[in-house]
Amino acid sequence: MKTANTLTLIPLFIFLLSIHLTLAQENTAPLTSQERQTVLDSIASKLDQNYVFPKMATQMIESLRSKQQKGKYKKVRDPQEFASLLTTDLQAVSKDKHLRVSFEPQQIAEQQQTVTPEDSIAYLNRYIASLKRNNFGFKELKILEGNIGYLDLRGFSNVEYGGETAVSAMNFLSNTDAIIIDLRNNGGGSPAMIQLITSYLFHSDPVHLNNFYWRPSDANSQTWTLPHVPGQRSPDTPVYVLTSPSTFSAAEEFSYNLKNLERATLVGKTTGGGAHPGGAVTATDRFTIWVPTGRAINPITNTNWEGTGVSPHIEVPVQEALEVAHINALETLIEQQTDDAAKAFYNWPITRLKTQKNPVQLDAATLQTFVGSYGPRKISMENGTLFYQRNKGTKYELYPFSDHEFMLKGLDSFRIRFVSEGDQIIALQGLYSNGRTDKNPKDKG
Image (cartoon, rainbow, N blue to C red):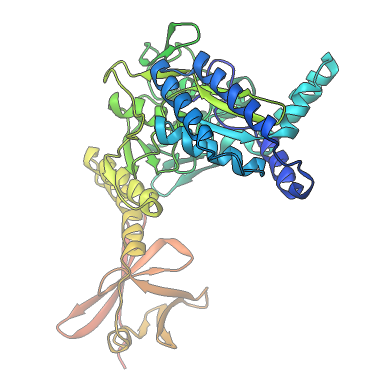
């Protein structure tokens, strides 16, 4: 999450600068006692003036002062170690995962050197270029089997720059029968992007998404879905959101909003637990502190996910969340159908997905019973593996999804079923994704 002007995520170009800084640590000036004191004084001031909970700010400041008096920081010379130590100590008191101290001299220097309009434009262009290289967080967009839309979203970028990409993505998904939004690797970003994307998932009537309280201004704000979005909305399309412990901040708000509005099914693991928006501020010429200045207040629950995270409806290992959501979406769509052809369309990919999760194993003796010719179709076995070939066409490797049914590796639209009578295989039945079937008896001899 962020305030009106500050992203929770450090921009990519700043991240790259920090990598460069890490590589140049040998040339980093060590901390002096005077700098340590300046950093502690500045952090105390920033927290006292801006941290969302004044009493907690006082407790954190008192804790830092106590540790300083006991000499905890006296021998720390490495600036990076000092920043990490302060972060740990502040979070130990506040339990606020957003709150962090960072050593970022190059970032601060670059900001301080941005004094002319030309400097500002160049600085902004570098920032936008870094967002473009990451496609504004839109990592992957595709249609899964069964016409299920999939979006891998790694961050909620500023709408001013990433809005067109978001609009394109949501319109791409508008003709799908269910939508899966993958936030397992999403660390947060802009509430305005949450508002834009969420608006595509509802009708045009306004929907109350969230409330925020801001301590510096002692003011409240609200976010609602937008009355107009470019292109097509998907208000009735089933939505699934994939979550993990790495799902954080704005990604948690997106998940929490949709969960409490009963608009999405969450699949995966409980999220990280950071609900306090804010932003990074300069503490000294080498240190910054990310200060949470507000708190989310959901209009339905009157609370938020701070410290607890957002729990999923379907809890599964993170690496299995996409597969489980895909199957659940298809099964939900099947339940909604009255037409057999539509049911067959959604059921077709379920078999493959379940087989991938729990492969069927058949012994060599069983496989051998399927070998033979079935009119124009031939089943052969090589090194313990069955192969299918029609006339002189492509030879496909077979793998079982039951004790008598097989899929073809590399050909998703066709499968085969062996028909038996007693202990004998008497025919091969072709199964097609559109529901059609055909059959060839096994050749005698």
